[in-house]
Length: 396
Image (cartoon, rainbow, N blue to C red; front, side):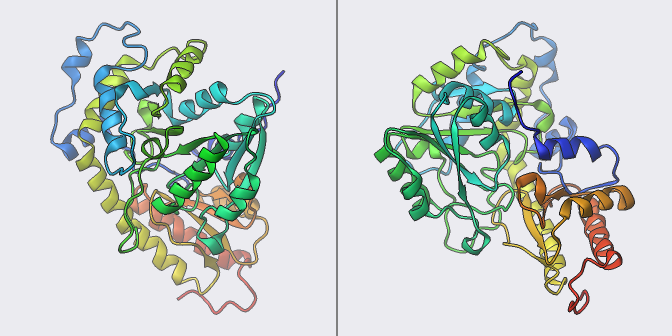
C-alpha cells in the first residue's frame, strides 16, 4: 500500500463539522444556494439548459464556454506578458483535484519541490507521495507571511529544482504576495528552469489591500512556466459544484494533465460545467457581495483580537477568508479546539493541523451570526479554562 499521511485539517473537519452549531473553521465564503446566486447577480438559474442537456460525458476538457470564462477571469486584473485563452485551461474536480492532477503530472522520484509553509497540507504531502524531495520555505509572521527571497535563492538548485509552490492569497494567514515579489520568484525559477505553481483559490478576493497596493497578477500571466490552480469554492462560495481548474501558458502541461486525468476522473459533470459558467460569467456581482461581507466580518474579528489585550495576536489579512491567530502562552491548541467543539459547539482549526501548535485558523466569511457567537465562545473558554496569560489585564 502506498503510504499517505493523514490529511490533518480534513480529518479534523470531518470529525466535527456536522456536530457543532457555530462553524468558524469554514474557509469558503458563505455558501449560496442557486436561488441566492440568481438573486445576487440578477440572472435566472439555467435550469432549462440543464434539463435539456443530454447526460453524456460532454466536453472532456470542459466546455468551450467555461474554458473561455476561466481564461477571462485569469487575465482580469493581471498585467503579465502572457494572455491565456481557453486552450490554456483544463477543468478539474475542485481545486484539490487541480493540485493533485498537477503533481501527478509534474513530480517524479527525486524531483526537488519547494513549498511555502505553513500551507494547505496537500501542497507538501502529495508531491512527496510521488517521490518528490519536498523542502519547505518558511513564512514568518514577522515578515507578514511573505516569502523571503534570499532564503528562496539559497534553496533553488539549477537542474534539480522542479517546481516552486506558492499560495496567493495565502492560507491560513490571508497575506498577499505583491507583484514585485512574484516577479522576483519568477526570475529565480526561470534561472533554474523550474515551474512556479501558485494555488490561487482565494484569488481575486482582495478585500483589504493597503492603500497604494495593486492586486497582483495571476502567476499564469507572469511566467511561461507559471501554473495557476483555483476553483469556484472559496472566493465564490460554490464549493458544492466541485469544480476547479489549471491554467498555464505552457500548453504541454495542459496536454500532459489531460492524458493523466484519463486515468482518474476523465471529466467534470456537464451539469456543474453549466452552473459554474453561469456563476463565473456573473462573477463581478458575486465577488462584490463577498468582498463586502469579508470587510465587514473581518472588522468584527479584528476588534475581537484587539480587545483581547494581547491574549490573541495575528497578522491582519489582506485577502481571502482566513486568519492565523496565536493564543499567547497556549502550546496545545488541539486540546483547546477539541474542548471548544465538544463543550461550546464551536469549530475552529488548531494550528497543529498545519504543524504550528499555539495557533488557530479561523474563517471569518461564513454566516455573520456564527462568527460572532463563535468568537464569544473562544473568549469564554479562554477565561474559564485558565489559559490566559497570568499577567493578562482582562478583555476590553
